[in-house]
Image (cartoon, rainbow over all chains, first blue to last red; front, side, top):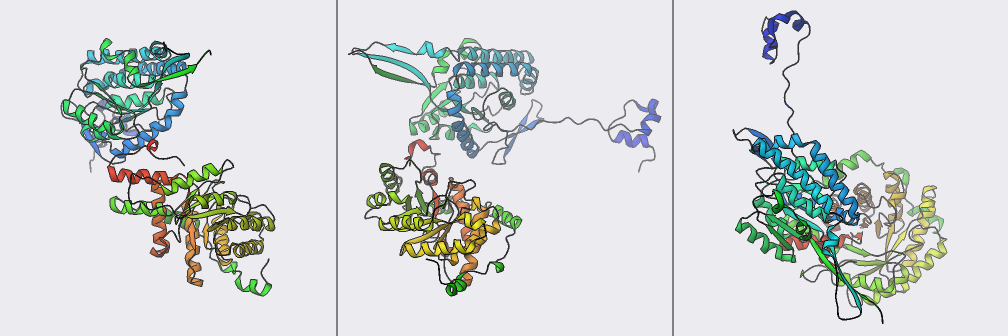
Length: 317
Length: 308
């Protein structure tokens, strides 16, 4: 309806330069102000990024209450699919040689380093101070490098030749348990998540992880890092959603060999332990509040999800 | 062995009058069967029904009497933790293993089925095929799964295919005859339809999709075409012919989709192991895992179910 073409151009949301360039603007109108392309945060199963099967989402808000993203509210069926993917990926991952697993972990660190700024920005949106966010991302990269180094060394540390009172050569070695379900810490969206995933996969297990409900952004971006770092499909599967809804499933699934719960809520720990008893699943509870430094890493984190196999080999007479 | 000319002419179907298959239509119809929501109580019922229709199968070069006995043991004790389970319909083995299976299943009403007629290729002279059948029937097989000669069929020698099935039917005596079309080698749905019609007119009690040795094995479009052929044959002759999709059905969800298709194409009369079977070896365990999940509410692991 406007007679003046400049007015309609302003309505389209541009033209701050205004009248000085009127002639050229009229001849070739500038496009509207660019809309930001918001990222769709999806879940990560079997090396793919599907939306949740349930079609449910929850809004994630920043400090000012603005919606940042709609996060998949994963269902038990998503979890079931993820366990199938993890089980499928186990044979391949557990037979990958230790040196190569270390290289792949190192590769994850490389890719994460390259995308560091994105992770800092995401942590800041989720309420972490800028400085702490930068420290956390650096610490996460270092943690991956730390476990990359352990990948072909923890076996020597924990294996043993045992003295026995008969003519047998008796030795114990570690073997991966299989599929590990991980309830990641609620208050550490990146470092806490990676501190639980890295030792499990370093030890040749595959895992299904439930990301922090209130800080899920980094988990999905980390899945993108995994996807582009030679980690075979199914080795790490990441879901988002409510722990109240999914913790029981994580603990009770018969095809999961161990469950890791990172958090200190006594009721939740009890629930997980009770349901895990179903198939005598190993239950690992990590109650630390800080994942920085030596409290958040160590070869014993790897050993948590290992079985010890002892072999009796006859010798001599 | 071939049928006298006059009788042949009266029994051989007029293939020119068979309707052509609309492939796009078939695929759209199949897609709709896969969208039915079968939950809770109806799911449990569908799963038990699927279980009762399974032909537990082992058809390997490495089969031994021990392995066949083990399979029979599995048929008798599917999952004893779950009371009230139906038993599978039959155990399906090679002719040389029929006697072993018969003995292992003595006193139970699980049928013994045997593949025969130079399974899986069908590339042997008729005399050898008939000897194969005689051996299986004499050893106590209740059901014979024969393969058609795809070689003759693809050459257009339909009369020979028809004659062979007729001769085999005669040799079977009271044993039920299932005719395997090996649809993966037939190429088009039109040929599947034609082969189904020939088999049914020649005396098949069941028509079966595949040997399980060729990919693709059973698919829903192929099964739909065969079910439609069975329906039209029923309208024409008043005879109820059974259907057995075999190979490639390993998940409960697929099995339920097949049952939905069966119910919607042929109706409730066909929802019985007398007229519908699944040829599968790994389906049983998946169905059992689902039933256990429904009973306990906890997702199951294959670690806790017997291997075949």
